[in-house]
Length: 396
Image 1: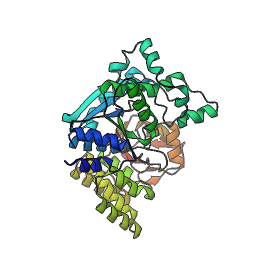
Image 2: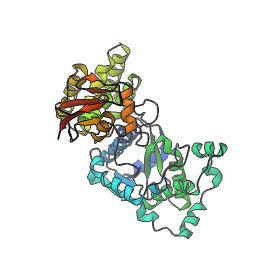
Image 3: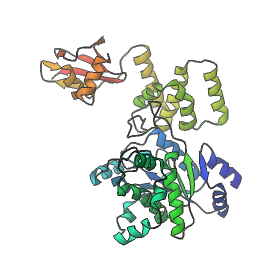
Image 4: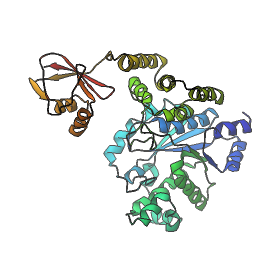
């Protein structure tokens, strides 16, 4: 493909390219580039926000380049401080290993496995000696580290900054050195880490990587970036009905943003959707089309259609799902709060109480507002909690 056309594809929907002339020079060599992407080891679910970057990486693969995925199993034990107002909790080896196992099948919903190199940064970081770490640390200054917004804010507010957090950027930079990265992709909140890697690569005699940043997708709350840490995400491996329902719950002001960042629609089709929004069309119609597209991408059109039909049946026609989990109860009576948690309709007693007090719990279609209520288990009872959770309670 023509170099200018490749550059046009690569730059599409990006925020910044550092530096474009360097990327152009790399493309002119004709060699397959090694394109690095770090993966957070803190949770096993890949969400639509991270998929924005993965889909850009797939474009690189389709242009003949190599995706080098680095699972931060070592740096996960440090905790990335990016955008954090306090020290991030460190992960244990057991937590990291458990999360890594669940990544591969999700990753390859998007990436081409034949052009993907999967690595863990413990491969090289575990081998660093104390002398190696001192040498690496000598390549950067504390003053430069404190230029980071998150560190600067915490420093001014006299909040603690641990030494291991300062090392995070240096270890991530060492990843780029170890795998000889030509390009690094990521969200805009990672720019400092990526630019640090460029500086460290120079210090180690390597050509600095080109940095390409992607926009951050807002989560379901419409405020914070989509993140596993904020629990406001839509996982690409979640059941079709769950993905569909979550997209239908999006704030109206995010509809266009999600069309732009979670689909592969071209400018012409995006313009039509924008015009439909401006013309006053019911946002529900556009959310339904978006939900169908997204579920089809990560599951199938058949499952997207079924999810849409069930959503309509439950929320528009006030019906019930075709499949409702069964929960058996041995006791003749059970406290409603305990039942909600045992049946998986609430994650804790406090969440169960909140759902009841907000009018979000029904028993056989009747709203329940008394958190001290004890349900008699004489026959089958349908419990609904929130908008999408159901349980069929039966005597054991």
